[in-house]
Length: 399
Image 1 (cartoon, rainbow, N blue to C red):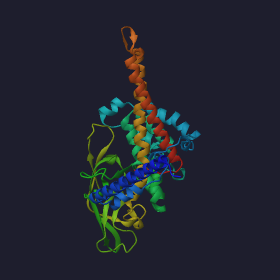
Image 2: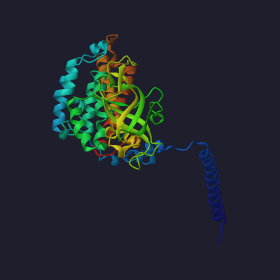
Image 3: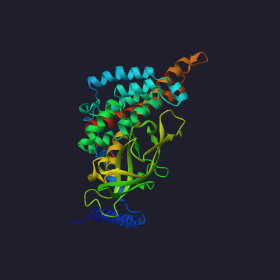
Image 4: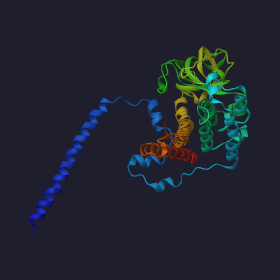
């Protein structure tokens, strides 16, 4: 027997279904309109989106993150890393005088020598090449501590270990390139820089119109004739080798299927014919080195490309995979160092500064501000440790 209550219930269910179906149709219709209006994703944008791996961040975007998923992420230092932090890093910090560094717009020569001889420029390079072979967390802690003494010193140490060509060589270099360059980079015999930014392309590196090359054959040897104009290149004025990104074209089909057109990365030493490492720029009134890298119709043999001819056109993928990892260590480490320094400095000052014969640290308004600063410092430190642990698990954070 069908009762009135059942009829009402069934009508209610049908109404809900109709409303849900109607909303779905409207949403689908609006999505199709929006899809037509949006520009298509380019190959370089697709490469950036597909770069890296997916870790705990998957759960955040799914809307159902669980704390138990974080249990596998742990950071730790081995005995050698702890010793380096307690000895070499502490000694370097005691040597740094940030006021004088800022005033002179350069680090003293003895600081440069310490960085070279004690392996600060080769922290990520494996021991078999003469480097330290440090973990991501150790690398991060070194930069963090240095940033509390001198931001310029921290930036100087960061570049060879994150934005320099070392990581690219380790992943994509030929054995000959690794054996030649990595020991020199580890010892500081060659200070590296990376030429990516141009006057009109920075974060949008794929749009680089001021760095281009064409495949040619010269004296029976296959190579590239490239012209480039790079700016804001950290360490360029003192660098002995530069990783150079440019857009490669092969109108004559000389590659013959080995490599392809697209963004390509070469590794050129300072004395390479036609390479001009320009005068120092000082856009930030900062002490760390910054300058230009330029060249016109520079001939680059295929063996000067990272990974050789086979890696022609693969540069964008290389950058997305490697620079993301370096940037997730060095830049956050500097930020965490500055944050923790602020917490310590403000907390100490609030204890010695008195008003009405009472330390301002005892006043509610000041305590509220200090607690907010401390909580933010805890959050950024936790995020730093999480990303370091993800790298330690061989995950590759996306750009």
